[in-house]
Length: 186
Image (tube, rainbow, N blue to C red):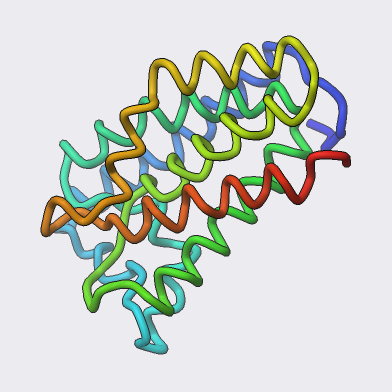
């Protein structure tokens, strides 16, 4: 599949989603059968070995419930983001993973930060703002639909639950907004 800036076919979009789903599911199965040993690869703020969690943390989940609560919105938002093209999807995804992870590593609580929710919040922020900035009807409609059906996510950026990385949610959301603004004319 060639990395193009233009649209990719629905079949190609489904393949991207399938491989994303497969990779995260394989990691979850390995983590499950190793007694959650992969959790040690999470993002541990201000701990040098924890830096690897910036890239690895989004693929690791703490429980089956955690996995299931992330995999469905991750696939839905990935599909919607693929409407911007495969190149934009890859670029925005890498930006969100790196910026969110770095900010969590710098400013997060001393805890293991794992899971795809930071990426999900990044996609949420991007999808809501990028469509509105695009001026294109299809993308504006995606923004409206995402804001309507997933607007409640915004409450997840607040520190309300002790074992939930609200920092990942907050920094993911902000990195998604920044990506939308940064690449609005490109």
